[in-house]
Length: 321
Ligand code: UDP
Image 1 (spheres, rainbow, N blue to C red):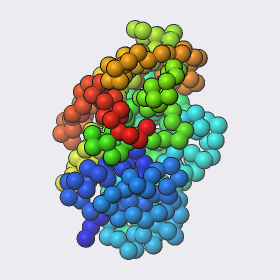
Image 2: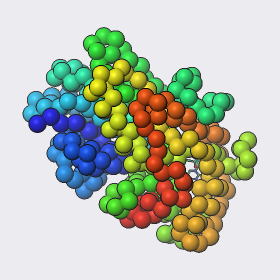
Image 3: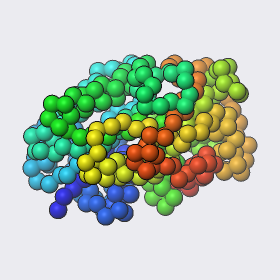
Image 4: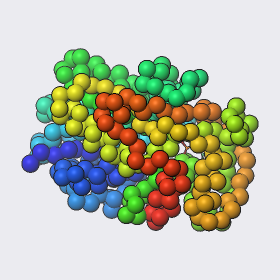
Protein backbone atom coordinates (compact mmCIF):
# COMPACT_ATOMS: atom_id res chain seq x y z
CA UNK A 1 0.00 0.00 0.00
CA UNK A 2 1.31 3.49 -0.88
CA UNK A 3 0.65 6.35 1.49
CA UNK A 4 0.41 10.07 1.19
CA UNK A 5 2.28 11.29 4.25
CA UNK A 6 0.67 14.39 5.72
CA UNK A 7 2.76 16.33 8.24
CA UNK A 8 0.64 18.50 10.50
CA UNK A 9 -2.40 16.40 9.58
CA UNK A 10 -3.98 17.06 13.00
CA UNK A 11 -3.98 20.82 12.42
CA UNK A 12 -6.63 23.03 10.85
CA UNK A 13 -5.82 22.84 7.13
CA UNK A 14 -4.04 19.48 7.44
CA UNK A 15 -7.03 17.73 9.03
CA UNK A 16 -9.39 19.05 6.37
CA UNK A 17 -7.01 17.84 3.68
CA UNK A 18 -6.72 14.39 5.28
CA UNK A 19 -10.51 14.12 5.24
CA UNK A 20 -10.66 15.03 1.54
CA UNK A 21 -7.77 12.68 0.68
CA UNK A 22 -9.46 9.79 2.48
CA UNK A 23 -12.73 10.66 0.73
CA UNK A 24 -10.92 10.56 -2.62
CA UNK A 25 -9.61 7.05 -1.87
CA UNK A 26 -6.00 7.77 -0.82
CA UNK A 27 -4.28 5.91 2.01
CA UNK A 28 -3.08 8.57 4.38
CA UNK A 29 -0.38 8.57 7.04
CA UNK A 30 -0.38 11.53 9.41
CA UNK A 31 2.78 12.59 11.22
CA UNK A 32 2.06 15.25 13.80
CA UNK A 33 3.65 16.07 17.16
CA UNK A 34 0.30 17.33 18.50
CA UNK A 35 1.99 20.50 19.73
CA UNK A 36 -0.96 22.44 18.34
CA UNK A 37 -3.06 19.93 16.39
CA UNK A 38 -5.80 17.74 17.81
CA UNK A 39 -5.47 13.95 17.61
CA UNK A 40 -9.30 13.57 17.39
CA UNK A 41 -9.19 15.46 14.10
CA UNK A 42 -7.39 12.53 12.46
CA UNK A 43 -9.87 9.89 11.34
CA UNK A 44 -9.56 6.99 8.89
CA UNK A 45 -5.84 7.58 8.53
CA UNK A 46 -2.74 5.99 10.03
CA UNK A 47 -1.18 8.15 12.70
CA UNK A 48 2.40 8.39 13.94
CA UNK A 49 3.11 10.94 16.63
CA UNK A 50 6.36 12.64 15.75
CA UNK A 51 8.20 15.88 15.20
CA UNK A 52 9.40 16.63 11.67
CA UNK A 53 12.75 17.77 13.09
CA UNK A 54 13.39 14.34 14.64
CA UNK A 55 15.47 12.59 11.97
CA UNK A 56 15.57 9.19 13.73
CA UNK A 57 11.79 9.15 14.20
CA UNK A 58 11.16 10.15 10.59
CA UNK A 59 13.52 7.51 9.24
CA UNK A 60 11.83 4.89 11.37
CA UNK A 61 8.43 5.95 9.95
CA UNK A 62 9.68 6.11 6.34
CA UNK A 63 11.17 2.65 6.89
CA UNK A 64 7.80 1.18 7.85
CA UNK A 65 5.44 2.86 5.36
CA UNK A 66 5.82 3.11 1.61
CA UNK A 67 5.31 6.82 0.98
CA UNK A 68 4.56 8.11 -2.53
CA UNK A 69 4.37 11.83 -1.69
CA UNK A 70 4.45 14.21 1.24
CA UNK A 71 2.01 17.01 1.99
CA UNK A 72 3.83 19.27 4.40
CA UNK A 73 1.60 21.35 6.68
CA UNK A 74 3.53 21.12 9.96
CA UNK A 75 4.88 24.46 11.08
CA UNK A 76 4.42 27.44 13.35
CA UNK A 77 2.08 30.10 12.02
CA UNK A 78 1.72 33.01 14.44
CA UNK A 79 3.20 36.03 12.67
CA UNK A 80 3.63 38.15 15.82
CA UNK A 81 5.35 35.32 17.67
CA UNK A 82 7.73 34.86 14.74
CA UNK A 83 9.00 38.39 15.39
CA UNK A 84 9.53 37.85 19.12
CA UNK A 85 10.85 34.26 18.87
CA UNK A 86 12.44 33.98 15.42
CA UNK A 87 14.63 31.01 16.35
CA UNK A 88 11.54 28.93 17.10
CA UNK A 89 10.30 29.69 13.57
CA UNK A 90 13.60 29.16 11.77
CA UNK A 91 14.15 26.01 13.86
CA UNK A 92 10.75 24.34 13.44
CA UNK A 93 9.80 25.63 10.00
CA UNK A 94 13.13 25.80 8.16
CA UNK A 95 15.34 23.26 9.99
CA UNK A 96 12.37 20.95 10.49
CA UNK A 97 11.68 20.98 6.75
CA UNK A 98 15.35 20.30 5.97
CA UNK A 99 15.22 17.23 8.23
CA UNK A 100 12.02 16.09 6.51
CA UNK A 101 13.52 16.63 3.05
CA UNK A 102 16.66 14.70 4.06
CA UNK A 103 14.55 11.73 5.17
CA UNK A 104 12.57 11.92 1.92
CA UNK A 105 15.77 11.94 -0.11
CA UNK A 106 17.15 8.98 1.85
CA UNK A 107 14.00 6.94 1.18
CA UNK A 108 13.60 8.03 -2.46
CA UNK A 109 10.40 10.06 -1.92
CA UNK A 110 10.53 12.77 -4.57
CA UNK A 111 7.21 14.64 -4.38
CA UNK A 112 6.12 17.32 -1.93
CA UNK A 113 3.13 19.64 -1.71
CA UNK A 114 4.14 22.49 0.57
CA UNK A 115 1.96 24.86 2.63
CA UNK A 116 3.29 28.26 1.75
CA UNK A 117 1.66 31.60 2.38
CA UNK A 118 0.76 34.96 0.90
CA UNK A 119 3.15 36.21 3.60
CA UNK A 120 5.99 35.55 1.14
CA UNK A 121 4.84 38.66 -0.78
CA UNK A 122 5.00 41.01 2.20
CA UNK A 123 3.09 44.17 1.39
CA UNK A 124 2.97 44.54 -2.41
CA UNK A 125 1.46 47.65 -4.06
CA UNK A 126 -0.16 45.80 -6.92
CA UNK A 127 -3.43 43.95 -6.54
CA UNK A 128 -4.46 41.25 -7.31
CA UNK A 129 -1.19 39.50 -6.49
CA UNK A 130 0.20 37.13 -9.11
CA UNK A 131 2.86 34.49 -8.52
CA UNK A 132 5.31 36.67 -10.47
CA UNK A 133 5.00 39.39 -7.80
CA UNK A 134 8.32 39.82 -5.99
CA UNK A 135 8.90 37.65 -2.93
CA UNK A 136 9.61 40.20 -0.18
CA UNK A 137 8.40 38.90 3.16
CA UNK A 138 8.20 41.41 6.00
CA UNK A 139 8.34 39.12 9.05
CA UNK A 140 10.24 35.98 10.10
CA UNK A 141 7.18 33.78 9.49
CA UNK A 142 6.99 34.90 5.84
CA UNK A 143 10.76 34.56 5.54
CA UNK A 144 10.61 30.92 6.71
CA UNK A 145 8.10 30.17 3.93
CA UNK A 146 10.22 31.98 1.32
CA UNK A 147 13.38 30.18 2.49
CA UNK A 148 11.69 26.81 2.29
CA UNK A 149 10.55 27.59 -1.27
CA UNK A 150 14.19 28.37 -2.16
CA UNK A 151 15.36 25.13 -0.54
CA UNK A 152 12.73 23.16 -2.49
CA UNK A 153 13.89 24.72 -5.77
CA UNK A 154 17.51 23.84 -4.96
CA UNK A 155 16.53 20.24 -4.13
CA UNK A 156 14.78 20.03 -7.50
CA UNK A 157 17.92 21.26 -9.31
CA UNK A 158 20.21 18.97 -7.29
CA UNK A 159 18.29 15.71 -7.08
CA UNK A 160 15.01 16.06 -8.91
CA UNK A 161 12.62 16.71 -6.02
CA UNK A 162 9.28 17.71 -7.56
CA UNK A 163 7.22 20.09 -5.48
CA UNK A 164 4.20 22.32 -5.59
CA UNK A 165 4.21 25.25 -3.21
CA UNK A 166 0.72 26.55 -2.46
CA UNK A 167 0.63 30.12 -1.24
CA UNK A 168 -2.52 30.39 0.82
CA UNK A 169 -4.27 33.68 1.32
CA UNK A 170 -6.71 33.70 4.29
CA UNK A 171 -7.82 30.15 4.97
CA UNK A 172 -11.25 30.17 6.58
CA UNK A 173 -14.38 28.14 7.29
CA UNK A 174 -14.76 24.51 8.26
CA UNK A 175 -15.98 21.25 6.81
CA UNK A 176 -19.80 21.45 6.53
CA UNK A 177 -20.07 18.17 8.52
CA UNK A 178 -19.21 20.25 11.59
CA UNK A 179 -16.70 17.56 12.60
CA UNK A 180 -13.60 19.64 11.98
CA UNK A 181 -12.91 23.27 12.68
CA UNK A 182 -10.45 26.07 13.07
CA UNK A 183 -8.95 25.78 16.49
CA UNK A 184 -5.74 27.63 17.29
CA UNK A 185 -4.24 28.44 20.64
CA UNK A 186 -3.75 31.34 20.80
CA UNK A 187 -6.35 32.25 18.18
CA UNK A 188 -5.26 35.17 16.04
CA UNK A 189 -7.52 34.79 13.00
CA UNK A 190 -10.38 37.14 12.31
CA UNK A 191 -13.33 34.82 11.66
CA UNK A 192 -12.89 32.50 14.68
CA UNK A 193 -12.25 35.57 16.83
CA UNK A 194 -15.50 37.17 15.63
CA UNK A 195 -17.42 33.99 16.43
CA UNK A 196 -15.71 33.63 19.82
CA UNK A 197 -16.71 37.22 20.62
CA UNK A 198 -20.31 36.43 19.61
CA UNK A 199 -20.39 33.30 21.81
CA UNK A 200 -18.89 35.24 24.72
CA UNK A 201 -21.10 38.27 24.17
CA UNK A 202 -18.33 40.82 23.92
CA UNK A 203 -17.08 43.23 21.24
CA UNK A 204 -14.69 42.23 18.46
CA UNK A 205 -11.36 44.04 18.29
CA UNK A 206 -10.71 45.61 14.91
CA UNK A 207 -7.06 46.44 14.31
CA UNK A 208 -6.99 49.83 12.59
CA UNK A 209 -9.71 51.90 10.92
CA UNK A 210 -7.52 54.39 9.08
CA UNK A 211 -5.89 52.17 6.47
CA UNK A 212 -5.83 53.46 2.88
CA UNK A 213 -8.79 51.22 1.95
CA UNK A 214 -12.40 52.11 1.05
CA UNK A 215 -13.69 51.77 4.65
CA UNK A 216 -10.37 52.18 6.49
CA UNK A 217 -10.08 48.52 7.55
CA UNK A 218 -7.76 45.89 6.05
CA UNK A 219 -8.85 43.97 2.99
CA UNK A 220 -8.14 40.23 2.77
CA UNK A 221 -8.94 37.34 0.47
CA UNK A 222 -10.73 34.54 2.34
CA UNK A 223 -10.61 31.06 0.83
CA UNK A 224 -12.50 28.07 2.20
CA UNK A 225 -10.36 25.41 3.85
CA UNK A 226 -11.96 22.62 1.78
CA UNK A 227 -11.11 24.50 -1.41
CA UNK A 228 -7.51 24.65 -0.17
CA UNK A 229 -7.66 20.92 0.63
CA UNK A 230 -8.92 20.15 -2.88
CA UNK A 231 -6.08 22.18 -4.39
CA UNK A 232 -3.63 19.85 -2.60
CA UNK A 233 -5.21 16.83 -4.23
CA UNK A 234 -5.10 18.49 -7.66
CA UNK A 235 -1.45 19.42 -7.04
CA UNK A 236 -0.68 15.82 -6.14
CA UNK A 237 -2.29 14.63 -9.39
CA UNK A 238 -0.38 17.32 -11.29
CA UNK A 239 2.95 15.97 -9.94
CA UNK A 240 1.91 12.34 -10.40
CA UNK A 241 1.20 13.18 -14.06
CA UNK A 242 4.77 14.46 -14.47
CA UNK A 243 4.15 18.17 -13.81
CA UNK A 244 7.18 20.37 -13.16
CA UNK A 245 7.76 22.00 -9.78
CA UNK A 246 5.68 25.12 -9.41
CA UNK A 247 4.13 27.70 -7.09
CA UNK A 248 0.45 28.68 -7.03
CA UNK A 249 -1.64 31.23 -5.19
CA UNK A 250 -4.76 29.93 -3.48
CA UNK A 251 -7.27 32.68 -2.89
CA UNK A 252 -10.86 33.43 -3.70
CA UNK A 253 -9.90 36.44 -5.84
CA UNK A 254 -12.23 38.76 -3.91
CA UNK A 255 -11.22 41.17 -1.17
CA UNK A 256 -13.35 41.75 1.93
CA UNK A 257 -12.59 44.41 4.51
CA UNK A 258 -12.66 43.58 8.22
CA UNK A 259 -15.88 45.60 8.47
CA UNK A 260 -17.42 43.63 5.59
CA UNK A 261 -16.49 40.34 7.25
CA UNK A 262 -18.14 41.49 10.48
CA UNK A 263 -21.30 42.55 8.54
CA UNK A 264 -21.44 39.14 6.89
CA UNK A 265 -20.97 37.47 10.30
CA UNK A 266 -23.90 39.52 11.67
CA UNK A 267 -26.11 38.02 8.95
CA UNK A 268 -24.90 34.51 9.79
CA UNK A 269 -25.41 34.78 13.55
CA UNK A 270 -28.54 36.92 13.23
CA UNK A 271 -27.49 39.68 15.59
CA UNK A 272 -25.50 42.91 15.79
CA UNK A 273 -21.83 42.48 16.62
CA UNK A 274 -20.21 45.24 18.66
CA UNK A 275 -16.83 46.49 17.49
CA UNK A 276 -13.91 47.95 19.42
CA UNK A 277 -11.35 49.76 17.27
CA UNK A 278 -7.74 49.23 18.29
CA UNK A 279 -4.33 50.20 16.92
CA UNK A 280 -2.93 48.67 13.77
CA UNK A 281 -1.40 45.25 14.34
CA UNK A 282 2.29 45.57 13.42
CA UNK A 283 3.07 44.31 9.93
CA UNK A 284 -0.53 44.04 8.64
CA UNK A 285 -0.56 45.17 4.98
CA UNK A 286 -3.66 47.16 3.92
CA UNK A 287 -4.74 44.92 1.02
CA UNK A 288 -3.91 41.30 0.09
CA UNK A 289 -5.97 39.81 -2.73
CA UNK A 290 -4.90 36.87 -4.90
CA UNK A 291 -5.07 36.17 -8.54
CA UNK A 292 -5.71 32.43 -8.74
CA UNK A 293 -5.61 32.38 -12.57
CA UNK A 294 -2.46 30.23 -12.61
CA UNK A 295 -3.95 27.53 -10.36
CA UNK A 296 -7.06 27.58 -12.53
CA UNK A 297 -5.08 27.26 -15.74
CA UNK A 298 -2.56 24.64 -14.60
CA UNK A 299 -4.32 22.67 -11.87
CA UNK A 300 -7.93 23.15 -12.96
CA UNK A 301 -8.61 24.57 -9.49
CA UNK A 302 -11.30 27.09 -8.66
CA UNK A 303 -12.74 27.94 -5.27
CA UNK A 304 -16.24 26.50 -4.87
CA UNK A 305 -17.08 28.78 -1.95
CA UNK A 306 -17.52 32.23 -3.47
CA UNK A 307 -19.30 34.05 -0.78
CA UNK A 308 -17.93 35.18 2.57
CA UNK A 309 -21.25 34.59 4.34
CA UNK A 310 -21.25 30.98 3.20
CA UNK A 311 -17.68 30.54 4.46
CA UNK A 312 -18.54 32.05 7.85
CA UNK A 313 -21.65 29.87 8.01
CA UNK A 314 -19.51 26.71 7.85
CA UNK A 315 -17.26 28.03 10.63
CA UNK A 316 -20.30 28.94 12.75
CA UNK A 317 -21.78 25.48 12.31
CA UNK A 318 -18.59 23.77 13.46
CA UNK A 319 -18.52 23.42 17.20
CA UNK A 320 -14.80 23.77 17.21
CA UNK A 321 -14.08 27.45 17.52
N1 UDP B 1 -8.08 41.37 12.51
C1 UDP B 1 -8.82 42.22 13.32
N2 UDP B 1 -9.18 41.78 14.56
C2 UDP B 1 -8.82 40.56 15.04
C3 UDP B 1 -8.06 39.70 14.20
C4 UDP B 1 -7.72 40.15 12.94
O1 UDP B 1 -9.17 43.33 12.94
O2 UDP B 1 -9.16 40.24 16.17
C5 UDP B 1 -7.73 41.83 11.16
C6 UDP B 1 -6.25 41.81 10.86
O3 UDP B 1 -5.67 43.06 11.22
C7 UDP B 1 -6.22 41.55 9.37
C8 UDP B 1 -7.48 40.73 9.11
O4 UDP B 1 -8.30 40.89 10.26
O5 UDP B 1 -6.36 42.74 8.66
C9 UDP B 1 -7.19 39.25 8.95
O6 UDP B 1 -6.36 38.84 10.00
P1 UDP B 1 -5.99 37.32 10.25
O7 UDP B 1 -5.12 37.26 11.47
O8 UDP B 1 -7.23 36.51 10.25
O9 UDP B 1 -5.17 36.91 8.95
P2 UDP B 1 -3.85 37.56 8.28
O10 UDP B 1 -4.35 38.38 7.12
O11 UDP B 1 -3.13 38.37 9.31
O12 UDP B 1 -3.10 36.36 7.84
